[in-house]
Length: 269
Image (cartoon, rainbow, N blue to C red; front, side, top):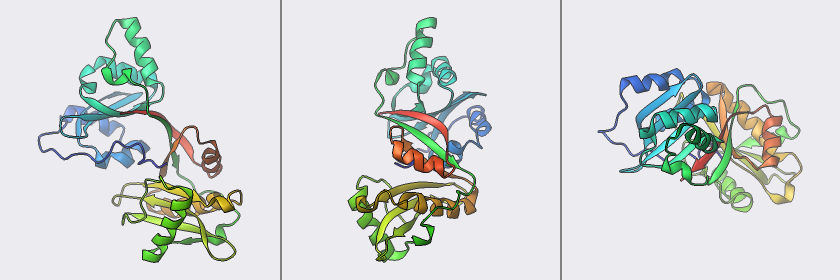
């Protein structure tokens, strides 16, 4: 999974939507947070509320509906949501700190306030946002990793994804992506990793990591992710990725390469 996997989708531009300057000041205070640095360009912001320990962004999603992003501690985000119930009105999707719904329920019980309808539903996913800011240690097998460019290279990526990760959301046909592959002794590409950046100045988001089952256990994922991360760090000094929280094998790979969890999320729709 990538950081994009649980992003609620591209915003629907609406000339009538625009957060007041007082609200955007909250967003500016969190401008250096990795999630904000990566996602802010895609937010059609309607409203923002926050504190030192929490940020909640209400943004346009589809005509007539909105999505929520939340950062910080579950308890402080819960406080913001109950203090500003208008933030949740019409919300059809959200990515909030994991544990926010439980914190909202407890705070609502103690203060006799209403729980927002959106938070009465079960999350559809629990995932972690990882960041890397330093070069990974050199991994065995990095000499087998090559950049996969052009139509031929992207066709090789597609072939590996079809076998090893057909549900990957990072599309090798997207011109905003770049790809790397790990080759076996015959020169065949058996492992891949990609990264996407919508425009300069936005950090690269890693994704599309896949290893042919026939070569798993040989360090292909570690090698290809290490190379991809090192290259992408040269542009912005930050690389991000999203990973389902129960993917223990991937967690070992990423943490072993220096990635750290920046925020734990639960998403609803």
